[in-house]
Image (cartoon, rainbow, N blue to C red; front, side):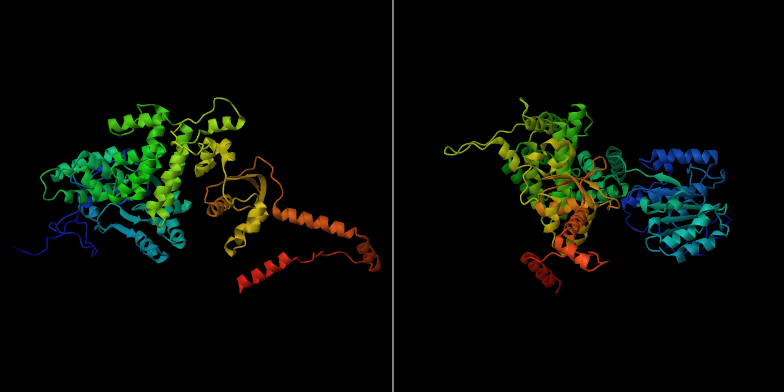
Length: 595
């Protein structure tokens, strides 16, 4: 064979700049690369963006800069390359920008592989400096080598430094007619507004689970692989709207079927993903809501031993509580994308709970999910979450709790639970006492305000002053100072603090105080700033007022007045109180801690 290179033509895209394009027979290609969309029609879940681009290209209103944003794996880089191909589309019959890329144009293959001389791709995560941007700007003034436009694709553009953004601004606002910019980012909030305002922005959406599962089924058919529909649904759910993640998981799932005659089952995929059986998760949730703590703990232990991830189990419980809320709000015909038998079970459970109770359960699980992710022992954290969940489900709704507090007859818990039989020689426990002992942290939510007096928090401070006095730790110094200067108390009760922020109060003061109270008492507190109610004095204002009043009392003392007459022109500058034994002990303790 003749190994001499083929002669270059006028439409040759030029050298690959050493990017090393893959050979045709480079071995196995992962699904995420093999099935990367080659046309706009192949993009799934991004119909709105494709429609806008189509209309823009047809009308000739082609922007000079595009900003593509979205989570990982939804097709930002793929879309950038498609736009670059559309801008430089050239065939024997078409010589103008075109959104229709079939048949492929002269430059399409090189652009798709990332090796075209006029389409420069840069990863801002590794090239963040102003020097890298200046390299681009120096090349902007030169015309493209072979394509219609010189296109600069900058991925993860939010990683650029401020100086790099500033260097880019002028060129971005008035680029030469032969230059186009395409930016991609997962952190759109980190991109300066001055850059965003100069770009046409497209938000790429997460792909819906049903659409993603259908896409996976089509790929399985093309690959000659057999995977259960339920297994594909599990992959689509685990991918959280990311097509790339879904294809990577499908790659792993197909391997599960190697050497077997049947399809890859949902159970195999569940084991691969570390998921728990959702039917068993519903059994777990049902036991927790029924107040059967022993069964719930046994079920979670069994799921954990079977390979279930505590965080994913908690997520599944959140999904089910959301489904219960939808059933309660929209009725049995709510679209839940669940099996018929599962929907029937959810309808039965939803009948025993109110919307307010379901909202409370959602908040408990949401807090519990964060605990599970941060806890050194996730299993223990999920067990504690389930216990709180069972306790909350047995409590009256906020409406009934308000009636109970007002002494209204007929108020009763919305979801009564059977009480265990008491021993013969002991009287049964009072229902209200049981509820108070198992009051969940989520009762501090605003809808449950009427039930807050039922809270009994161990070692809870009785006032802002109690908290300030107890904060002797050096780590609490900043919070202690802010509490003294900026909190004007409106109301204070166990589990709930309302205050009017003083002028220049830090915006995160309520969150910091709530976190400190939770660390202190082990219970979530509602710390609510308000500008609708007048609060009292801050501690600092009260101290200053008391000092002024004390100074006035001292100045009226006959001995002091006599001294002022003896020394004309003298004035009282300061009044010092004699140190008590407690003050001396505190001073010694402070000195020891600082030494």
